Length: 344
Image (cartoon, rainbow, N blue to C red; front, top):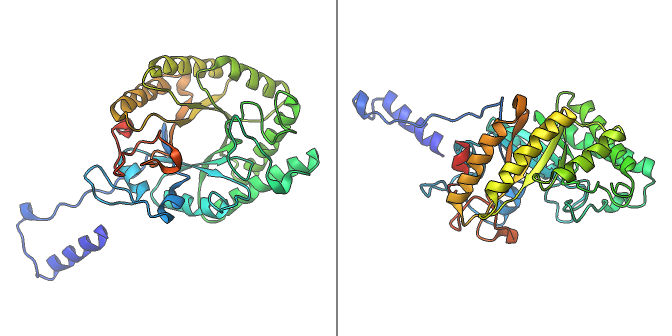
């Protein structure tokens, strides 16, 4: 709407219907563009279309209603992360829904990370449930299903002009994925083989995309050594080690320091790049959240050889108890808190 108004004003000036001196001329804000290189300052907004369908609105810091990704971009966010479920019951986060959001990110000049959960619902440290359609497959057919699903979703994005820069093969897979076949504590080889199946599928569609294996608790070096020693031993292919970090007001300084130590260890021990794929902080503590994120950004940028690719805030736009999630970066009136000022 603002561009239409600007065009009307411009036409009026050209037609002589409005006259003003140079210093009285309307000053239009410059369009901000996203940095398509370097450090990713990201947000996972996978809930966005569902929130919009539910009538949720978003406002900038001045209380003006705007489209959410525009608000995030103007706060310095240059990258969008989107989760993919296989056959979700309600349709949200399936391939078609992901495409809608990815195209919006593309149109804003934002970079894209795709996060495969390999489930019909949440895949996380406590849940790595196979999609219903895959539950009776042999292990050989399960690998084929992973590869086919990965390639199909990415091809849909590529055919629509979306340039995917990073792809997660699994989400917070601290004990593998697609249980029980790919449970790492029972069969690390299977977990490695499933990871490689996803990796190879990514490269067939986006040869230059970087493939991420993503684990929670980025401060826990023992967990990371166990998982990545195992994956390395069994020949898994991956490019980037991804982390999550969800501290509190009381412990963020300690966890940030431990996360930095862990990132440096991953770089030196495995020769891999790292990325913080998820962070969150109490939405009610905006000033502390900014301090946490500012410190983490500085630490991430100090990782040896510039090997940290970026940081993604998880669902910062979730507010007012949406889905009972309280770790976003918007207040109860739908306006951004100070948290994301750390990305400016």
